[in-house]
Length: 398
Image 1 (cartoon, rainbow, N blue to C red):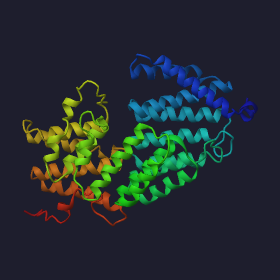
Image 2 (cartoon, rainbow, N blue to C red):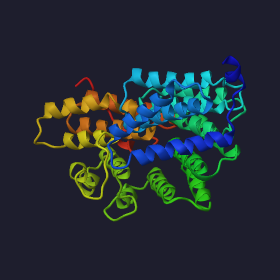
Image 3 (cartoon, rainbow, N blue to C red):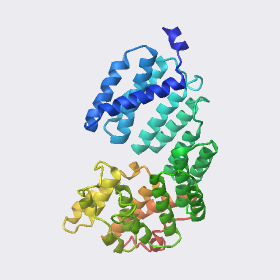
Image 4 (cartoon, one colour):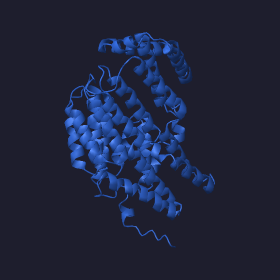
């Protein structure tokens, strides 16, 4: 049996074929069923192949295990111990097949598994674990990855930016592009590069990336929307108000979608002026509107929901205060550092308007610290939202 494990290899074509077959099987079985039922089907298929020593069955078991982890990445339905159990099972399937990290022809399958775990750690608000797992993925793949290292450098850039290390993110995105990435991966690299420049308070470089990306062919609508959004954010850095962002998320406009509405909502809450809050769609009624698909388990939605309620004067103040402080415990779990900054700035404004100056100062310090980190110590307000607070005398002793 050891001899079979040592000699058994799958061709790239076999791996692609089995991945497509598993994906098709899951999609067919998942029609008109709940996410929980979909997950149970994946687990049943995983168990069916789990004890087999046949080469193709081992590969199928690995792919179903990856599918279970991907399901968790989307729905967050597993405990840490369950995630670790699935990870160990998938890794064991590769070991049983005889694959060796770095050395084997298909070692990139280890890389795919570790990269998926890196994404899960990032979702859970564990950026260090995410970064380590991403590096394991890069090293374990050796030279076998069929599509080059571009995807890994894209992943590294995303994680570096989450850490607030914009310069490392910019370098990683640039390396990813040099690796010859194409299609959606290239568009993700370009968007990451534009966002990293913007968050480091380098509007001119961000704008150059946006303009050069627009000249590419076959850009999907979703990426074009992101480019337009990044450009509107750059206008704020240049001294404009929030009007361009607000216009984009109005009903029947291009960005009348939950993710953009939530982000614009926090831009409005972070402004020194309250006028923008009056013009935006309300979060709670939005969740009941036909044609708007909102995932109520989405963390950014939960932040928006609680912050909108924080401005509801009919709710007792102490109840609102406790809710805001409770949700702020989860701010590190937001996947994007700019959303984290917006939440801290919105919290600072709300605390200030409720005369909670110690909490306001603490929230502002979090925002300022992230700004300084992203800009390499140059700028304390990289989103251009806190000019009035940079020189504010907080009078904390009063």
